[in-house]
Image (cartoon, rainbow, N blue to C red; front, side, top):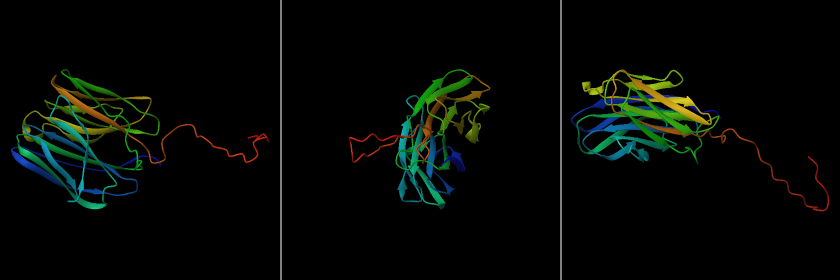
Length: 220
C-alpha cells in the first residue's frame, strides 16, 4: 500500500503555557506526526483526542524543537493538546497525518542537522516506497522548501519575531536529501524520518519451501 498524505493543521503563539488545535485523520493504517517548537520551556504533555499520548521521535540536540508520532490515531475531528512545563515565549504546533503506514514498524532511522547559512539539508537513509517527512525551523523568516519536496505546512515569521518552521515530504530513495533555504543566513535546524509502507516497502520477495520427502529434488 502506498503512503498517502491525509491532512495538515497548525497553530502558533507566544507567552503561553499551552497550544491546542483540531485535526481530522481519515483512512486506514494511519500515522500522525507532530512538530513542536518551544522556546524558554519544555513539553510536559502532548495528547490526541484527550486520550492518546504522542511518543517522542527526536528532540533536536541544538534547538527547542521536537518531532512526535502517534500510530493508529482516532478518526474524525480530535483535539491536539500541547502543554508546556512553563511559559513559552515563542511556540508552534504542526500536525500532519498519513495513511498506508506500517502499524508495527512505522519508521526507519531518524536524522537531524543544523546550519548557520541560508541552506539547511539533512540526508536520510531510506528506500523506494518509503516517504521521508521533515520538520525544519530557522531563526529568521522567508523560508522556502526545496523544489523536489512537497511542503505541507509553512509558518513564515510566526509570532512576528523572525521565526519560521515547516514540514514537508519527499518520496524515498537510497539516500533522500531534505532541504530548505532561507533568504537570510541564520541558525537552522531540521529533523527527518522515513515512513515505512504497510506493505513492507520495496524489496525482493523471499520464499520458504517445505519438502516432506527430502530425497526428492524440488524444482521451481
